[in-house]
Amino acid sequence: MKRKLIPIIIFVFLWTVISTQVTPIVLPSPLQVFYTTLFLLQNNYNEILVTLGRLGISLILTYLIGVILVLGIVSSKTLKVFIKPILLFMQSTPIISWILLALIWFDSRYIPIFIICINTIPILVLNIVSGMEGIDKKILEMANIYNISKKDCFLKIQFPSLIRYLLPATEIILGSSFKVIIMAEVISRVNVGIGNGLNIGWLNIETDIILGWTLIIYLLSFLLSKLILTFLKNRFRRYL
Image 1 (cartoon, rainbow, N blue to C red):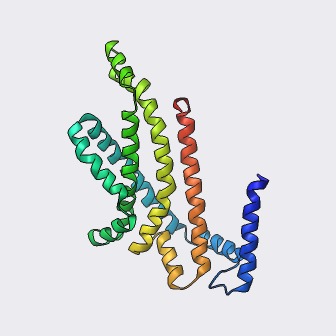
Image 2 (cartoon, helix red, strand yellow):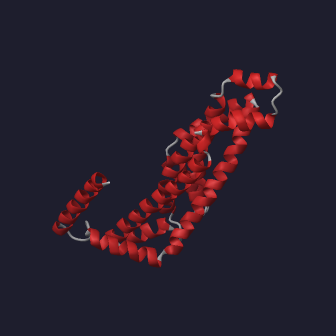
Image 3 (cartoon, rainbow, N blue to C red):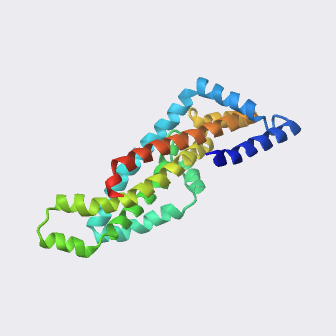
């Protein structure tokens, strides 16, 4: 624990030293950023809740659409040939390209949700499909020979394999989603949200506000990922 704190202490020390040599516009002190962060948390909770709401809606849509696509790919080779290249294209296209297109296609309120779905659906679907394809076909044939029901076959053979691929996919999704949705909010200039707070800080050249929001983003992203992944790992521990 102490070793983990050493890099943080060194970083804060260097930050403090550098901040004394430049103006607050260039780099405010750590203490100023800390107080600004507390102020933002106390007075801008609505911005935080709106962004969290957008993120929640985006992830729900991701998993709903993802499950439908997985069922389509697994049940039909024709759909697999059609859908998989599209997902690979979505995954390889830069996020900024999707944001610029979304600025043309949608109202700014819906852009962050669209961008999260575009970013996360390929990750989810391709990982689950990999899990399905990784199941030993001989085991499935044995289950069929011994007349094991489809329900038992899924719960005892297929589901454990899926969980091993689903959790890493979820970890990747949670790790990137917060950053992506904030970027989408900033570029699309939403009226409410953390991205709006960052834009206000940038327009007013208030570096402490930008750094304060950045610290909040980091903390929220870390806590959200930790809580969800801990819950999922405890819930499905026997399959890991």
